[in-house]
Amino acid sequence: MFSSRKIDLAVLLAVCFVAFWWRLGTLGLIDPDEPFYAQTAREMVQTGDWVTPQIYGAPQFEKPIFYYWLVAGSFKALGETEFAGRLPTAFFATALVLLVAWFGARVWNRRTGFLAALVLATGLEFCVMSRLMLTDVPLATFLAAALFCYWLGVKEEAQRDRWMFWHMVFAGLAVLTKGPIGSTVTILATVAFSLGTKRAALYRGRGFWRGVAAYVVIVVPWYAAMFAWYAKPFWEEFFIRDNWLRMLRAEHPANNHVWYYAGLLLLGSLPWMPAVALTVRRAWGRLRADEAAFFQWCWLLTSLVFLTAAQSKLPSYAFYLFVPLAVLVGRTLDELLARGFASSGERRMVAGFAIFQCALVGLFAALAFARPAGAAASLAKTLAPFAVPVVLVFAGLAVSVFFLLRKNLAPWVLASSTASLGLFVGALTVALPAVEAASSARPVARVLMATRRGDEPMLSGKFLVRGIIYYTHSDVRAAQPGVRVLAKTEQPFWAAHPIPVIVWKKGLRDFLREHPTALCALRKGEWEAFDDEAAFTARDDFAQFGENVVIRALAPPPSAAPVP
Image (tube, rainbow, N blue to C red; front, side, top):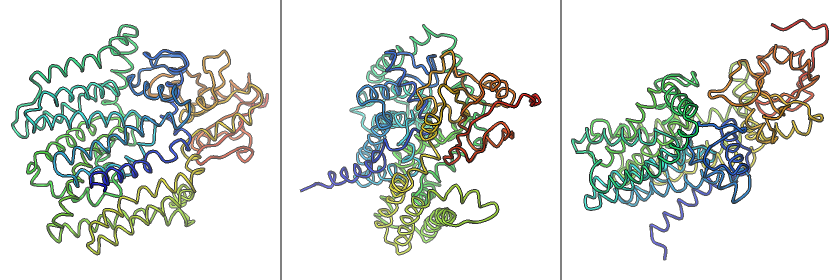
């Protein structure tokens, strides 16, 4: 006979398989981040230099070394494929789900752990990010392990030294994965908890100091080597540009709003928005009623304030916040299944959020099938290729609303957990070509190589260029680089890349006087912003992939006037 714990484990592994592993290598690398990590790992394997991360033959310090070790090791063992590149992320996502289940069961009960893990594994953003080559999934795993160990050190005094040792080990691994944020998050959470409960912090004792020694062994060697070999560029790029300046300057100004991460946590939790709303409502006024939950709130809220204060904002930066949120939501769902709603107001609020998220996805589904005119036409055109995945999500949410309105809470939870999984089933089967066209440079690179005439130069906008270089195996350091960037400024990237840049209209005209033609891979917005159709052959002569186009730039006629 299978025990309940074994059944829970089997269910969670099945969910993780669909959410993180199923058809993991089918989709081309997603621009612009995945090709960046893949190219660095490729060069690590090719050069045999496993200490200094480099891209296009030059050292790059955007992230520490640990994640590159993971991807390069996977490439070395399994070959350079999309599956191998994403395997470390899927592995850590699965480990994190099981870690949350273990922690919830140890601190509260088995059902809380199972529900928290289920919420985490099936939340929309967690599912999406856990299929990509990103440092944020291992980072979230190490942060969760570090903070879970700290809490167990608080409650299990006899084992405090052991838990504090592992707290420091996992914090060190977080720092080796993404830098100072690995310790910043843990310090903010634990200090806030100490202040809120008037408990002394656990940064003391034999276990802690042994942990400090382990932390030093994990963190210091690589950072010391980088300072010894590349003192100024390492300091300026890693610490100043990629950490400090992101606090002060918005790399993506459109995201820089005070509500950005709060909205992301709510929308990114779909299909669990109603449960998130209930969790917040129940915490209001009784935040410290449950110390274990209060610790999760300290983690969540301190990091939320910190990330909101930072000027640069991206969805991936807040990825780790879905861990404490899932733990809190899992606890709320366990209480809800045990005792039901505390009031009619609670029930109406949860039903309202459930209907809202279902209606929102239903609107997207309707637009995907409809052909509206006016302002909605552009959105409908974008959604059309994704009609099947969106309908599958809507179906799961509609069923969950049905059970919720009938007050059948267990079937509501079950139906909710299937909604986001339907997105991946549809996206990776029926809609796969459309998803790849919208997100990856792989099909564009294939057309470039098939259409290229001899050693004809290839140009790309900054968004696609990393994927184009990766999939065409171009050497940007050659005397005649195979790929160049066509951009509005001489430095189009946040951090400098050793890729030749052609600066907009005048640069292209000058370049084409030496090279009669050049193949161009651009986003539609870039091509339309160029506003000089005479420089290109007709768009219909070449390929379109979602928002990406492949066109050929032509040398201007001899009589053409100079472009300012």
